[in-house]
Length: 357
Image (cartoon, rainbow, N blue to C red):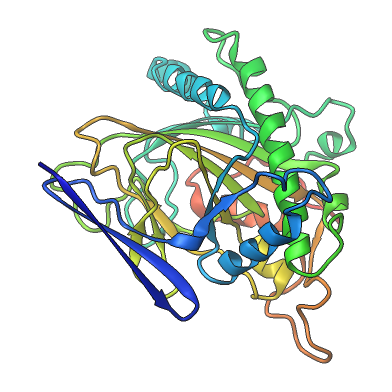
């Protein structure tokens, strides 16, 4: 019969919880005990626990850049419905998915075909397939007319007429949570709660539903479902199924599993946050290997929150000493995002995408 042990230890102001199993081949892993953030009484501006949660976020952001959130206000039924849609999307015929491949869309929306993306340039192409969608901005929106990437229409398969409404509801719900997390981040930096609000008026949002086949038998050490990478935007809110497979690189370089926790999202900071904080907060590498599902596919649903395309990503007040040179060159959110798409996809970003003057 499997047994479980729990070891708590204090190390450099971090309380660690190490879980060990015997009699079972699926690791539970090592997690920072303080990485579980309870958002109850912190979901509205000025809520009672806002400052407390903000300081907890600061500790996580200065360490791994990863944490779990519970009591986040997103109904579990909504999350489970989205997993059902993810499976239906990935079960569509290959020909249908290829006809609506993301690289054929100026907004980079649609299906990602197996082997299209290579997140770790030292590894093999990722063993995964997915579907991208986002907020549908109207044709007369200035950013759509300018041809900025991620602004415009989605590609929807005709076989799933309920997909647009389901995804729009999920996007709007996760957008509200992401905006609140950005407000808590502002508090964590000693800034007004509304500091980042102006960067979210026309955000770049990507909802991605991913299927990872079982890890190939006999695969070499350069084979991953998703190679080691950091996320590109500001905040990623991840729902993952019960199989596990996500691994996070801790500050000491060790790779540890981010074990699925019922009713929780995994939240991680993207590369724009170190730019905003001049390196104070971190976006740590993570990767995926679907090795513990018993041969079943693994599904995950990351929601990528990125600010307005034209938002300037420069150090916020309090993160840059007088006379200090910023660690990162100033850029817009759109410039950064386009660079990352071009780096990791074989097919070029659609030529209609324009850069701001």
